[in-house]
Length: 142
Image: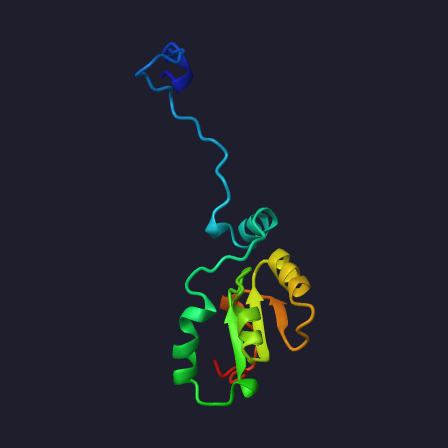
């Protein structure tokens, strides 16, 4: 009864790089991606600190926002989930919306945004996952 060790081994093939020939696939260390959560975002915000709008700028949504929200803007309690380094919160503040809570799962970007908006005392910045928020129901109007 032979074991697998008793079978002759195939000779190892050596690979050289020639035009048109592919070397065997070797797994390279994969870069971080969105699925890596706050680790990915912390690294991204350390290397790219300039504001980035993922969807639309405040100037593109201001009219629609005001059309569907009927309270005076100074009273609104607004949640900006996944704020990143968007200028949206600061632009809304300058437009008269004073009670904005911005959350992101990246502690790096929250610290950057707190520093950038330090003169806007009523703005709140929280490091928090949007899927696991701990605000009371009804805390926000928008």
